[in-house]
Length: 171
Image 1 (tube, one colour):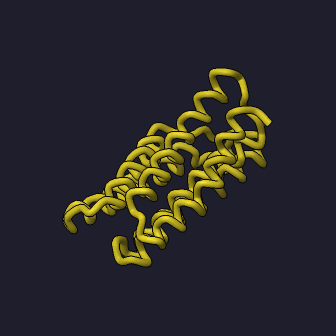
Image 2 (cartoon, helix red, strand yellow; image 1 turned 90 degrees about the vertical axis):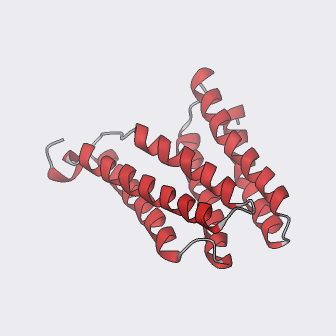
């Protein structure tokens, strides 16, 4: 197991730690774990590309770990009233839709790489989650939810528009 994959697995292990800290009302410790987990996402990608440690396991597990980490935070936000359930549903729907489109593309021998808007969505979502873990004013919390929803919808639409050939049969 290479270093990049070890970092991805570390992120997976951090998810239940993050949630336990949230449920124990140790918000700042949970925030620290979330930040550390988010940094491992950047670091494992850098290591995998820079040191040629890209693996099929990493291609599968890295985005899955990211999605589970962020969705775990958002589920907790819904539970404590910091995020409406419909906003989380939009995020989950986009993730399933894009993943499904990628599966169809792979079936046709095409790989759909992450686009710029998807990277912006991921980064802005992680920043917003960090802010929402702090005692911020309700208006800022609402702004964070709006940023998450808008970047999620935009990047999802962009993926489908740019890759519409996947479904049109003209690949």
